[in-house]
Length: 284
Image 1 (tube, rainbow, N blue to C red):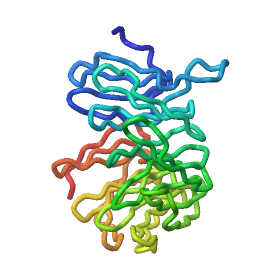
Image 2: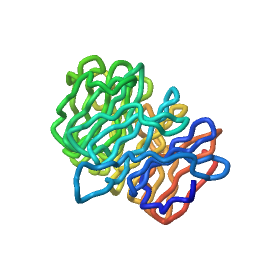
Image 3: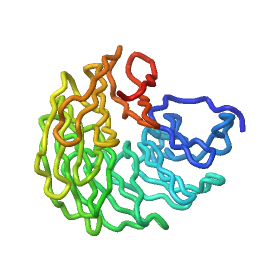
């Protein structure tokens, strides 16, 4: 297939079995050879019912599980396509654009949308299992652990829902929109907020365990590795915090806002930021 005329790309790639899957503002989900970058197939994930728009952007990052790619788009839908050839397995409408990454676990797909709804769908056929109105746009990708779905909202809340029926287990309010995707580890939910904080909450009841204040908004999704929380802030800093009490273990000043989620592999930290660089450094 010829090289595409790429639109803007805000989707984080998903990599599985030698293939890279990524969405684009041109409305397509692409599958690329990891070794060559050649396009093996593309799927019109952003197909639009609006006669004035050919395709809506695919801002959402895809999720790959069991031979299927799950992805949302600004055309108010979630789609499942085959990893082998990009053929559509199902597509299901949502209450608003989907700009978050679907979470897939135990035969269900959990997705939040800009209509203020979290939806659980069957991974097999896309049929609706339940929906929950969380009150505001879902701006943080869902995290699923121990029978709960955790999401952040544009209204500043972190909300925990039951995976079985979508009933609300608890809600914790911050002082700014929550664009950071929650991370769950060892019974604790870690999340950033536009109020400049990184907060640790009890996964069972939502009680605050600790909160750390940065100097600007936190839209980076925390990564929790070996008892430490790795997170960036728009104050240009990359922080390593103790997962138990939030104390600073180490920090790095970079040349731009750090809104990406740090990745930690073999004691090396990888993170990109607003100065156009990708940093790789040995964890102290």
